[in-house]
Image (cartoon, rainbow, N blue to C red; front, side, top):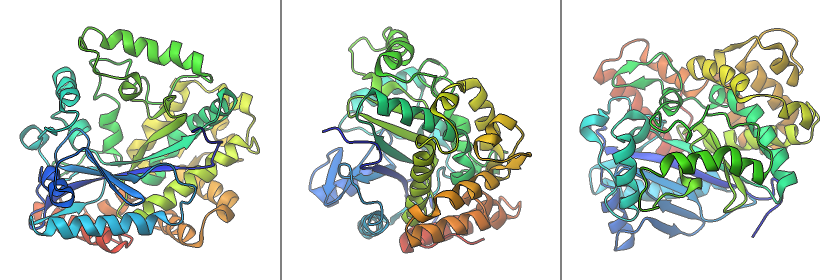
Length: 406
């Protein structure tokens, strides 16, 4: 079934499974699924939320079980599933941990690929890209899926998504620490994301999608080069072009949706859904052409947008934007930080957000991205004991749907 713009939404949230004491990565999602389901399957429907696994054995994904028109009920639904999973994991001395990257994981030693359904596909990926790296096995994100009905709606949505992508990490960055060090990037996940498929660069492109605004253009510009580049590696034709496309937002013509992938997971589902609601409201505003015309949106090249994005993944909300043409989209006349852009957007769309969503966005705008708050909590002390103390608090925030305060 095809839906109209902003009629329904699909949300996916990824979490890592870790030991309860030292927060070591535990590749036991198959044991979790066995206890829940009586057998190991790749997906477990659980009412309105579905559990699934992708690529590695320590990550569990929770997603809406089909498209939903109602964002407001999602924080509670996701929380119920998180608490149920944590209850099962307690028997295995394990728990879920939020944030977009494990702060102490050594992926070369600790990565275990999923050995069950789709394992042939994952093994092929591993053979091509060597998935024992942070960009593959130490990444947790939120994906937002937004529908389009036809080429006309795709054009509007894709144009708007491309414009907004560069500043999303300024709101959502949550991955500053890798292997017990601050990487210099508040969004380390997206820094790895840029290059983790360098063997076949056609798959990720410039992260920001190309200027393509119809299904035909998309096929010719994005899918055909990907299919041609993968052919020598995928001799059994296991890989689908939708699966291979790794840009920061991808068109899923198999279900007429655009999937946004540049959003780090937060400390609790209420924060995730609040961020999703703000992003969706900002995209509605761009699609309405109230801020800037569709034709102007379409003129931005991926290189121009990527140069902004590449700065934002370093400094998140504190990134100073000096591109006058980009600032003009948001009615800003002088150099402004990304926080100011999001405050400006929030003021324009605030009434579209539920009261609880407003509360969470205002907390983030006032206290900074989760990365900023994690770094503030650590105060340049990256000892294992200090990191454990901070990330245990994050685990508590997830279990109890609380915001993380340094």
